[in-house]
Image (cartoon, rainbow, N blue to C red; front, side, top):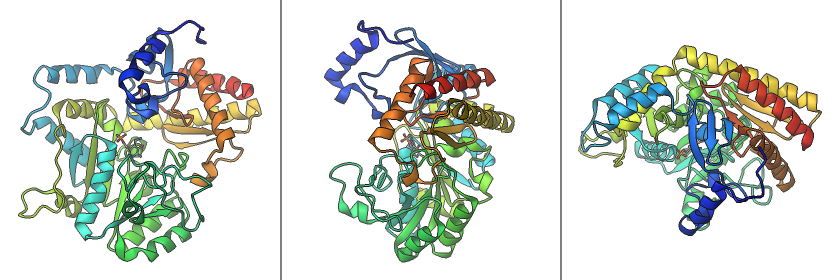
Length: 436
Ligand code: PMP
């Protein structure tokens, strides 16, 4: 499956793309050197590129395709809706039915508002929290990715040269030109470190609108938040007139009611995205009546006015409803069991190969680290240039041998996968680890 030296169709397309798209791409996630491959079609857990090469898809469009590609039930439902119109300046029944479905899945969801991306869902959580308690600041985990809203992206690219003292990590910008006001309004706390986090929160208690936590933050290392840490955040926020926001854009797949069901806590607000769109662009903000009321347009003064041209469009709603119907308790448990099996086989591959590596993750998600011990937070998961180059080499080896991963060497399983793909992956991983 190695590429030949001849010009490939993807290379030709990429050269044209560079004329009209910055760097030739529409999103940096898919950029690869020397050029990204172009997809031709996907089916189940396989994607075929325009060169005709098929790979098993462990990236699943960045964890968003819970049933893999072109799931027949979703395709059928969406095709019917396409013929009846794709968006209206009216409400549709399907948004109501989908809202009912998600609210009945999660006890913490009294109400839900649909939107178009996870970025928007996190932004909406922050704005709703500010509107509710009138405070300006937010707290977030060092290194955690929550989309590209100025406040939410702070510290996402921190490194040893600028991350500062571990007891009070610096609020570093991502984009050049981020206003210092945005940075000043973000408290960056160290993941799973209760004492240091509570000290930081205490210091800013009177200004904090919300604390955001992703219970299995991808960029931090797919390391699960400890029960004690989540409990400490729940208690502190309740005592300090501050909202607890869960970013479950990725982790909603971890339980029938999302990751929250494993912690026995309910967030005040939850940001959703990815899998709930059934393969179409989506975001949602869900939570308790008291906090969701900030969006309610029946009030004389709306604390947080929110709109969006394509919010709750019937295509996304139809696809999401079909996808989540098929992701019932049985499907969730089966996929999580496949995830346990995947991490077992990955651990075996690591020990058979003798490589310095480890695996983290939970449920149907995993990340392979080229570190002897599984990291415990952003700083221990951080890779210097040499480490990053080796991870890149491993991701490329897997890609060239039929397995598409996320660039961090993370994988997200889909219900279209079986033991067979997991076993083949582990075999290929073992030879890849031997090579690097
Ligand atoms: N939150 C988390 C945890 C995410 O992983 C992502 C996307 N990777 C987002 C928010 C932003 O979602 P979107 O890309 O749909 O804007």
